Length: 230
Image 1: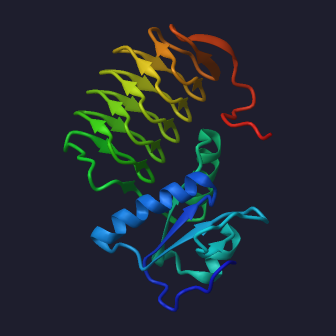
Image 2: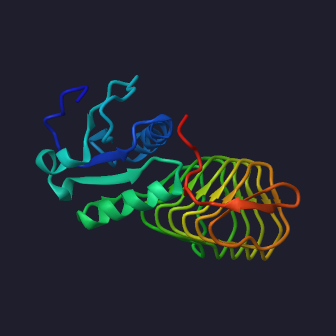
């Protein structure tokens, strides 16, 4: 643990993942908190033994939360860009009966016709139109565009400058890389990775890696990993 816990343990936001994406989520949460004062404290949750923590925030392991905070006082969001890991951490949080925090940048306007799942994180400069369904625990990076009647499955990650046209359907635990562009009425399966800069003209099945213009299936997504370890 890198810093003493505040005596006030009410309204805690736990960011699960203290890596680079976790630091980005911390900045988003700080912007939200300045406007709404939702949380008395923002902490990181990470199960690694060694953690780079330049902000010197509190970092605790998931196994330590129960002894530190009443369940009613903490909500958790997931900060990893790996869809399969997002899914596992989500299941772990739900199984332990913790609340999931949904973070939406205050400049993003969500139409009443659009449904956002619990635990989803939406960054700034998102263009979102109408009648869209975004599942639980989705992560949407800045500068994405989501067209009318699109559906995004739970635990998926939408990178910056992705353009999802109307009536598109994106599966569960799927990753769209930077600058992916989708033609209208396209479906992408579960557990699939679309490489950066790809132009998707036709449906892409489950559990594959596809890329190019037009996007083509290159191989099966056997390892369920977007960012392999060096």
